[in-house]
Image 1 (tube, one colour):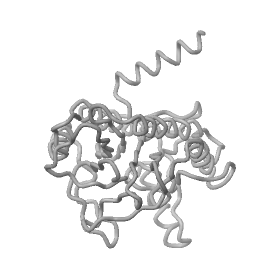
Image 2 (image 1 turned 90 degrees about the vertical axis):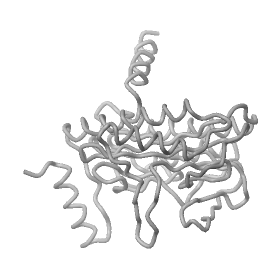
Image 3 (image 1 turned 180 degrees about the horizontal axis):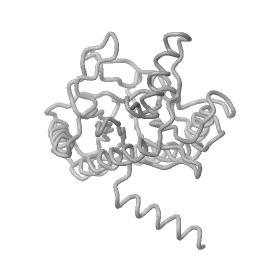
Image 4 (image 1 turned 60 degrees about the vertical axis):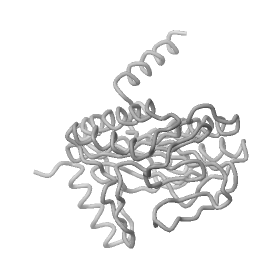
Length: 292
């Protein structure tokens, strides 16, 4: 018997063939339980890598630890071999993007140095479902402007997530991100977007990091999104390096990236890519806020 999300996947593929547009696939409660499990797993990988980041560490070392953690837990590193049409397969378990690299950076044996910032993007597949997350981490002591860029990127992610309630619109997510980022004059990367997620890493809809309130698709309970603002200190323009994957800022300015996989529930957004400890801390914080 096909599960709800499998039927949704078939309908989405049919809709794309007939109308040129994919359907958004709502997840069942069983699907969401699997999404929670893979979300916690990839969050554990993210936090392990965060603890490793320091001057002298290489991104190849980070990649090796990430891949081992994913495979030891019985999951598949989703990025390895990922091949969009016209692209060469991606060779690593994580995207490691340093300083002016926005996303899709290749791991290498260059040591991180004091003052760098590094964006780590990662995904794994467990029991047929994908968890996807990203964060930008300071390497030692960084400049005030770099620290603010990271902070504001995380804030825009939180504000975008806050829009993920039933009956709101996908455009509300981009509007919230754009409104906050533009207060600081940051370039909002428009060439790459957030996306639906579930059995596939990239499902409908696309979720741009800019937009207008009340536009685009209606949000419904059961939808799962990967929301991922990417902000530049300079302009929004990008270019891709000769490796065909690494995307950098056109003007050489610093860039930061943050991402969570979330589920839309009747009670609002649920962040899936948190560790068990982070979920307990979030629940305690909400209880304290409610009691105040």
